[in-house]
Image 1 (spheres, one colour):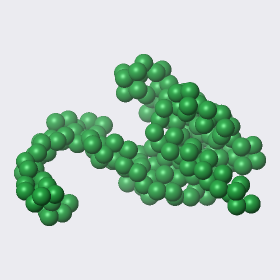
Image 2 (tube, rainbow, N blue to C red):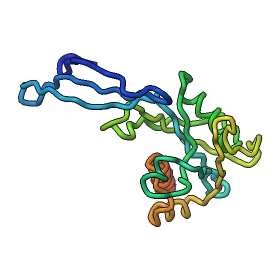
Image 3 (cartoon, rainbow, N blue to C red):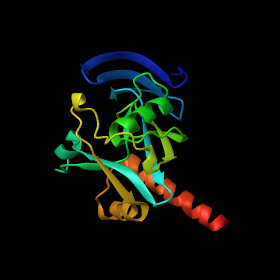
Length: 197
């Protein structure tokens, strides 16, 4: 962190279990050159990766559906439909993502394309996600997926046509930000390829 705009004063860990919640006090140099004292809390649970798999032969995408406590607490949804994702835990993003795809979806896909890295909630969470896209076929299925039972995961794997997935965004069935970004990216790319053909 550059001290040209940021001067740390103190930090205090408020909670440290699955992630770490820290309260920071610091001075921030404003655009007019003056310094302002501020306090903020930041939650750090590490960085992650997410991937949308697309089957060009069927026009389907591979999504997951699972219980997410924060979503249930703020809206009552019993399950969230999303693209597979996981924490990096020190691994390279592409390597970790391939492992996560096998674990969650049951598909072993070696060729993934890195799209971009995105901060999903920069006002309070330090995490960024590495976004990937890849193609899959049924011959790449190595198990039923469903997640890691030892970690309390009970994941339903869904194959949905891209057009239906886009409709599910409009209807509110898909509300997960990373999934919406990936679906819209794929839809735009396919449209551009169609226009260029």
